[in-house]
Length: 84
Image 1 (cartoon, rainbow, N blue to C red):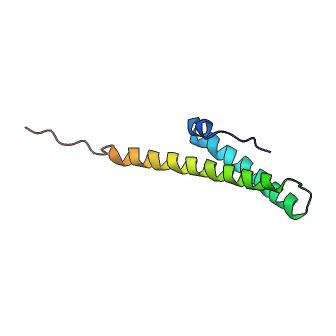
Image 2 (cartoon, rainbow, N blue to C red; image 1 turned 180 degrees about the vertical axis):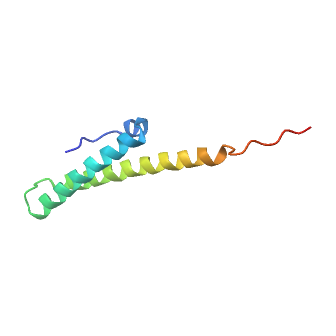
């Protein structure tokens, strides 16, 4: 299972690394959910903690993507004509 990573560490990650961590976390959450449903997992609160961590990861990724879009939209795509 994926380890819990602090929000500071998540924000330092590159988007590609973050996507990889999200995939790993999704697998862990799915396994935990099945374990809880089949009563194999004793610690059902762990499922909730892992789900919250997954939500944090997705939020940070969305923030990074929005930030990149804003940077791209504020940069001029066409050079302004020189005034004479």
